[in-house]
Length: 312
Image 1 (cartoon, rainbow, N blue to C red):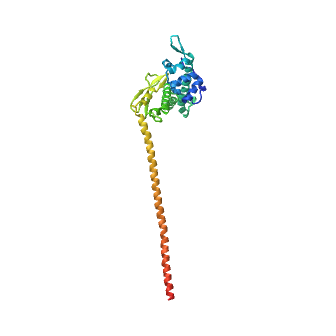
Image 2: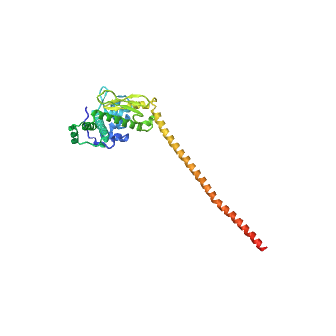
Image 3: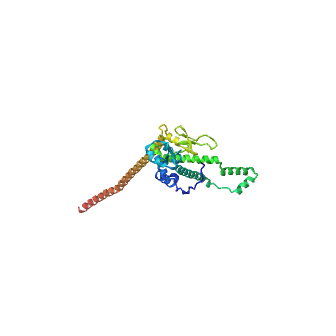
């Protein structure tokens, strides 16, 4: 069934970043309480986790006692003991998916259009004047201007998918990476990994080349790029990017400690220097007093001798 334009204004601000309780409350308000429980029992805890799950109801085909209660609500049991998903629940999940997927597309268009707002726009009248002018230099400027303001749809789509992959990858590392020994840092493209995405006209699947030398093929689920294969690689012991990140963080910490030790040593040396200067100053101040007392004793002795001579 083709996607229809929906009113995404019913979603609360920041809905795409909702996680755990906030996400489940969002599902309850839009789809229903049972649908929220179905997602929770599968460990689907965020919007992007939901968008990258192929079939929400596939788990109900498993024979598991933990699913009996929710299966009794969501499914109809036929006479031959087979179960059929009630169409209403499928419709609720489909509506929730379309609404969140459309909100995600609107978000990508918004962030891709921000740099263009800072560029000066050329009026249509000036553009026509450039086209009508026969001078070669002005024609070149007009051609360059039109190329800057008219981006091909394929390039725009590639940019949107590229931004989506970067955003989704760093969101996963921030929320899930610590469980697998990956520090909460932002991976840098062309340093920690390289992303390869072709335009929509080719059948080549996107891929990521990790800094450890392994190239991972990515999948496409419902028109969106899936990073599940790269997540598995990051979790594996063969990927050295975890050690690289930890070494970088430890190196920064050691540098800070060395700087603090150097500052403390410099402060101590300055303090010792001030103490030496103070002692020298006190010593020089005491010397005149000693000389003065010596001169006074000599004068007193001379006066006593003179008095004795007069009495004689």
